[in-house]
Figure 1 (cartoon, helix red, strand yellow):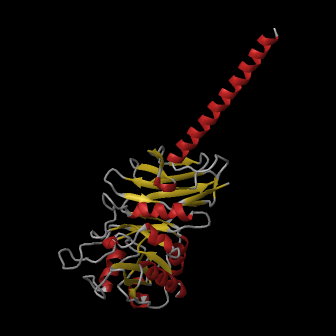
Figure 2 (spheres, helix red, strand yellow):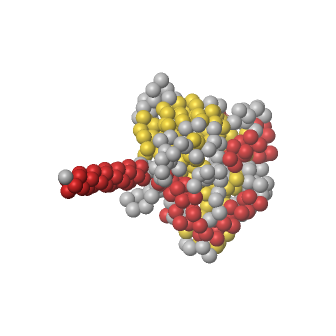
Figure 3 (cartoon, one colour):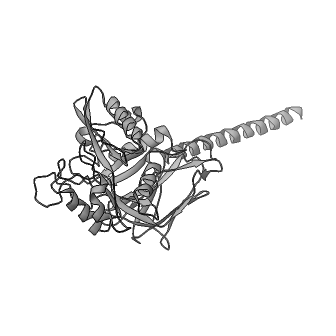
Length: 359
């Protein structure tokens, strides 16, 4: 009898051990699945760090060239094109040349259009071009030659800030100049180009090198998003306003941003740029963006758009078609950040910023 009782006890202990092993293995599998989906850490009650609900946007372009450098048209003609085509603001960013917005007073007479200060700081380092836009800065900064790409980026970003401006790192893949390591080795800029209308800057990368958007995710994942992160922007990098001219074939209307602001003024636009309060677009538009508690919602203007919610490492967490005009992602636990990419059937896209998830 005692032997039988001992066997029963052994069977019970063994069964419990097997059950415990199965649960442990299942938890490992779930953790692996979460990592593959861009989720990290133990699931917990998460919320978004910031709350917002925005439905008023101001459209603008922040990378623009004129005849003052290598563009094909006079500054006033360039400004006039953007104003006539529904933009609220434009920054003229000629190479190593800050254009004074005061020269466009006549074109800024109304309250619905403004020219903001801009300059493309044009540098070379290690045989490669390194370009940083100085937006909203108080004075011309200029460029130069530097021993390393990190030195060039550091110098430009620090000078932009010293002049009270907002730093935008331009087209990292232009001549394959800037890698993720270069971006991470420099001080954090406020803005990064994730789409450029310039045909020669390899926005989409190639078979061996990442796209601008993928580089952005690498930086977001490595540096984190809590407390604010580098914001992704889309730009024209306008050079050719007159079709068929000898300027590089980057025309207007190919990439733009929509800043969160009810007011159209230099101060309001520059503040939105500094804090990354904007979304980027190649043509897809949004009616509204809302982030609150554990929910992230977007309302695309195109009812048949696809919305992808993306997490750390560029992992797609979920794909949706809007229901009643809205696509919503709710935090599941373990996310570090979430951003949205909206794609219309014609391929035009929009990108929100990445919003941090915290406990």
